Each structure stands twice: as structure tokens, then as C-alpha cells.
Image 1 (spheres, rainbow, N blue to C red):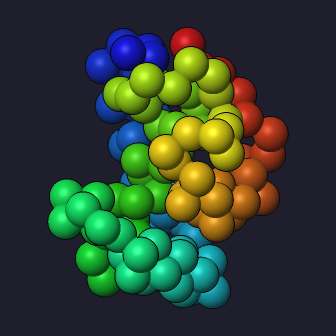
Image 2: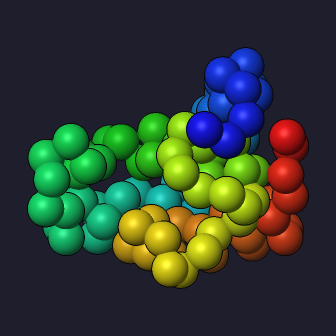
Length: 104
């Protein structure tokens, strides 16, 4: 497990706050990313539904900052991981936050 629960919660909730500060154009871009992601989901538990772009953004921030509750061992985004289908989201996050940083 990467990071403590408190770090994950902090980064996750910060993601929701950042989402609320995005422009309408950025929110539309995130919505398109979430809809595209959902169209390829094979596991119902993995499918972000329309309107879930805020949650998808917050969870993706956990991955970006290296505190996601997964087996990831590094901060940022590694295309060899099962998260490869999140590449469009990760490109968006990199534009927003800059290079990946660990908060561990």
C-alpha cells in the first residue's frame, strides 16, 4: 500500500477542491475523458459513469501523487501498470499539476 490513509484522503479531497476551481472548458475536457474511459470499461466496478469526472479526477490525483491504495510503487504514471487506460487523464493532470511528485 502506498502512503497512509490520511495522505490518500488529503490528496483525494484536494482533487475535489481543485476540480471546483477548473474552468468550464477544463471540466468539459474531463467529462469527455471520463465518458471515453467508461466506454472501454470491462468491469462494472471500474466504469466511471457520466457525471463521475470529479471522482475520476480525485482518484487519478491519488495515483499521480503516489498515494493510491494500489500496488503502484512510484509516483506519477507508469504505462506498464493496469492504469494505462487512464493515460488521457494523466496527461490532463500533468498539464495542471506539473511533473509527478510524491507526497509520501
